[in-house]
Image: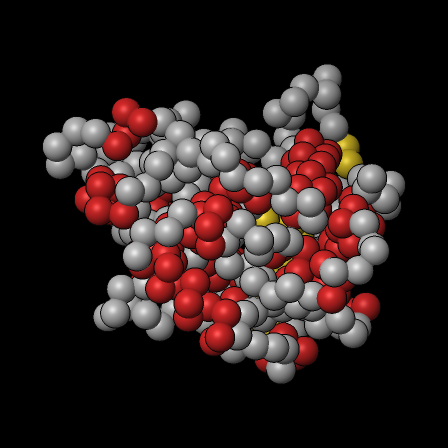
Length: 360
């Protein structure tokens, strides 16, 4: 489905490499030069249009905000957190878009439980207009969720969040195309066509590899920093003994398919997998470096991680996600009736959550 030119779009890297030896899966490919692969010699001067889709990785801010904001992003609708990509976005701004995507049912479950968590009287401030729905819509739904209504009774009709955001609508909006004779696949293919021009796409479920790919596209080198993925380290965030099982892999049995986002996500994953393979992105090829070293080399605005943060290894690498669902711990599982894919993680007195989601 993806264009053959996907890897050669603006912001992506042409396939012009010198490879020594056999082409093994984790072989490190060496670009001929920064100019040859289209990398700006001043990475910090590159423009970024961050398409922040709800429940797809707020912690990507640590990476997106290293670079200058595309001017059109400042004036995009709506609010500071979840700006959707304008329908009339210019080609130059489209080529600056960076975005993380998430498996549709997992994103939907994350949204449902987050609304349940945040719909208490004292926390009833989030997930409103910037999510793309009106007060007369979200207020009764949040009340129903607060009173125990299920996902299927409240949110199952809100499909196409990621497709909406790519095409210029709010995540929870119900655009006219949902009610026309247009086949959902045709709508998704319009979003895919736009996505193919993005500078970068990543997967919430492959956090470390996504950050490494982003860094490589922006600087021409493979690495991750503590400022970007510090919460992946044992003892940080919600890890337990460096284990990598997901505590936020939701049980989505009974959740309906999404006729829009399922198609878009498949295309995003196809592009991501192709770029990771073509550009030599792997756990072994993406060393953990100190944030201040990256700041000094590329003049990036990077915070300083704890000096004792260990590098990612076989026990805490791409198997672990970012911090999307950081609030989900054992207490939250019990209090909000959260259903997880691995029931064993729901039990155990005092057990801490294992962090594999991302904060949103």
